Amino acid sequence: MILYFSGTGNSRYIARKIAAELDDEIVNVGDKIKSGNNDPVKTNGRLIIVTPTYAWRIPKIVEIWIREVDFQGAEKAWFVMDCGSEIGNAAKYNLRLCVDKKFEYMGTAQIVMPENYIAMFNSPEKKVAERIVEKANPFIKKVSDTIKAGNPFKKPRNNVYDRFMSSAVNPLFYKFSVKAKPFRANDKCVSCGLCVRLCPLNNIRLEKGKPVWENNCTHCMACIAHCPTEAIEYGKKSVGKPRYHLD
Image (cartoon, rainbow, N blue to C red; front, top):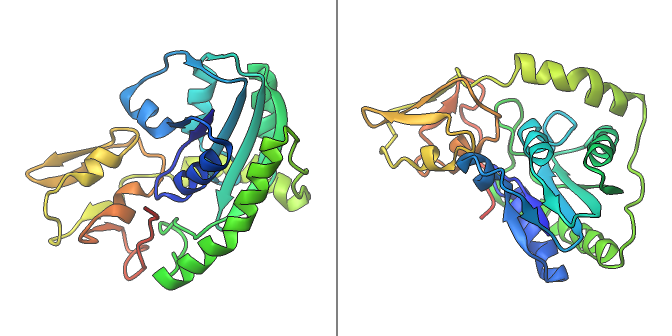
């Protein structure tokens, strides 16, 4: 079984590629979280967990959901993490999660995909993004072949910088950076409600036809990246930046 969480489409793309190679079932964790569905999940013995990298670890909301759900029949777990540049020492925390869930940990693989976190960084223009995705395809195939063979992934890089970013910086990122307050919609908003439908934490509502953000945000960037009129900004940090999402 392939579990994926995706705000702008990178992890969904990878999960679908792996599913096609393995002829395996695919589950959208974001939909489960949005609907509050923590029901037991029957598996075929293996779990492939595909997520973006949030501050050098898997998204906190995904870890929480995995901890709360009973994965019936699950024995082995592979983690596939996409990122704009690096995943830090995420493997340490994925291993810890597997120990707690009594899964056999089969490793963590890193796949570089187009940057989407425009609350802090720049997203690439469309042509550049397409080249990055094309470059990632052989790595996705290699990941799929490794899982198909039942083999563990090779250990990722693990230096002092990686350990520091995943341990010390990760909680600081959530405490000081993951805020919904800077989100706003300008006059280009057409009241389509797509942002409301996409938010995995039900953190957005329409008020007089305009989106309003509450305080429960995970910074998945789904709302700002998918807005059809590019009406959503994150304070001044997103102004003028390309919006990236992968369908």
